[in-house]
Structures are given as C-alpha cells and as structure tokens.
Image (cartoon, rainbow, N blue to C red; front, side):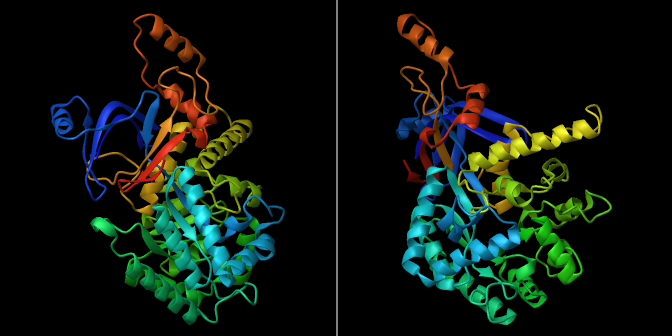
Length: 471
C-alpha cells in the first residue's frame, strides 16, 4: 500500500512536526518500508509502479491514540456512579458490575463488542485493559478486541483479599495459577494472525491493587511475569483513602510493596501515582526510582478529579524525571472514552497546578508546571506507545503503520469539518475560484483548533498494523 498526503507527529515531548506531501509505503505485514517526501526519486519510482492513495487537502494522518488504563467491564455503567470515595465506589459499583459480566457471557460479549467499536471511533489504536476475575470472560474480551483489530493488552484481574465474598479468588496460589492459565491460553490462541502479521492481543498480569492482593499473591505474580516476560499493570497511590488504608494494614506504601515483589519493572504500567511522593522527604525520589526501574505511569486526569481531588498528579515533575508517561481514560472512574478528553484534562489540571505555584511561590522562580497541547499530544501518541513497549506512535521505516485520518476542512470550499470553523480559510477558497491563489497547507494553528474543539466527526479512518479498521 502507498499513501500520500500530510503526516503529523510528535517525535519528542513538546515538538510537533508537519510533513506536507509525504509518501508512506506499507508492506503486507503492515510495516512501513518507505517514508519520504512524495517527490523524492525513490518515492516517484514507487508511484510509477503502484497507485498511491492520495489524501485530499484539509486532511492529515496522525498516529492513533494509546489508552493506558481502562476497566473494560466498567464500560457497562460508564458515566454513572461517581458520587463516592474510591474504596466505597469499588464495592458499590465496580465489583458488582464485574461480577455481573462474569455471570453473563452474553452481556459481556455485548458490552465488549460495543467497547471495541467505540474505541476505534475515538481514534484509539492500542489499549491496556483491566478485565474481570473469570478467565472465560476475559477470553471474550480478547476475542472482541481481536475482532475489532485494535492492539489490546488484556488483564485477568487478580485479587485474593478485601473484596466482595462472592467476587474473590480462593487463595493466592489459585489466583497465580488462574493468571498463568489465562495468559497461556490467550497466547496460544493469538500467537500468529493471518498473513504472518504479529499478534495484536497480549496478556498482561493484573494485580488489581495492593488492598486486594496479599503479599503471597503479589510475590507469585512478580515471579510469573519474570518467567513469562508478560507485561504488568496495576494502580498505585491513587487516592488518599487508598494510601492510608495500605499504610494502616500493611505498614508501608504500596510503591515499596510492589517493588519488593518485583512488580515495578520496565514492563510495568502503574495507573495514577497521584500521591506517590506524599510520604517521601524528597518529593522527586519516587519518580527517580521509577525511572531507574523503567516503570511507566498512566496519567488519568479525569478520574483523578473525582478520586484524588485533594491532590493533582505532579505531571511536570514526573516528566522531568524522564519517566515513561501516557494517558488513560480510566473508564468508569473517568466518564469519557475519548483520549482527546484526557489530553485536554491533562493540560487543564497542569495549568491549575501552575496557577497555584505562581500564587504561593513566585512566577519568577522555578519551571512552569503547566504542559501545553503539543506535549499532551505526545503523551497520547508516542509517549503512550513507549509506555506500552510498542514501536507505534510515530511514522518511520520499520514501524507498524498505525494511523488515524483526520479531516479539518472541505477541500473544495474550506468549510471546517464537524465543530471546526476556519473563516479566513473560507474567504481564501472563494478567491481560489475567482483568481489564481494557491490553496494553503495545513498549519500548526489549524491542528491546535482541532485539538481544542474537534471530535469524532473529524475522524475518517483508522489503521492498525496496516489494516484499515475504521472508515
């Protein structure tokens, strides 16, 4: 496949690159084999042999979004039940919904199929999913993600203490055995897909969080990850009630508990980490430790507003510590499935933190705690891919062709697509028809406008591993 047009990407934090009139060649396995200006000699030779798909004016390709933290069964009650503190909320809403899907495979398949469809429409190309306790229900989740064509890390939740009596595993050893059996079954089922394409669905070891996992269970899961090389996901220092519960019941912070059981590795994503520095004499030390371990963080700004309102995640400090960071929607602790919402929330929360810093310290002392929209776009694309350990998130030779096609305006009239308006552009297009004006290229300001007010109406197509899965 050849595709020609404007490509947009963030190769590093804070940098936006617009590549006008470039050509990408994609092989049968879904990898980019050529990526150059469309008028280069090699590009022209390729186009003499094969017809390229040409994107119209006003459209660009961007790497798809990566959602690092989503509770798939909680999609059942998305947008409701956000009236309680975290630990109460889990027992009142989350555990009940998860148990309901474990009892009803037909409902589970219906929920997970719709979830996959919604994710793709929202431009999500890869997602790390918390499932339920039951292996068979998690296989349904894996099947639906595979059918959708999305990259998915599917986690069978592990927990052996402090849950509902009817929603808990029999013992720590039984929980480890169940996690191993599920991961092996998933790998056997999806080891190779058609046309020798790499598998898009993988297991991820998923201790829910320290309050529901005994030391024996955590130790066993750490050993299992080391044995199998599987990824790990969990929650860490999410809310004040959770942090205080762990200190009271276990006598130390959860970062130390995870670390001693070998669950903080270069394959680990920990969600939230909002209160991670609250017990350390040096607020930066936990971040330095996570960087040294290679552990990534899923920043979930919307759910943090509900469950961590007394403290905002220190995003700028974590970035300064060079931790791998991406964004998570955290359904259903967050009500929006759209990573664009997570980007906007991340910027807004960081600006509030900066306002507080300026008010209490000085505008002339210290680095700004705010991030801008380009930095958030990096977190949603390449930053998230790096946290997941995948080669996606950027257009380059050797990377999988993962992309979303975004329309900003009509190529004939200049009228904005969806919620977008470009009034001066419309006037230019009127002159184009009357006189010999050149039609304009896409600009950074146009992309910023899409970032601020764009929505699903702007998304025309999504590709994962070279396969068009939407549009």
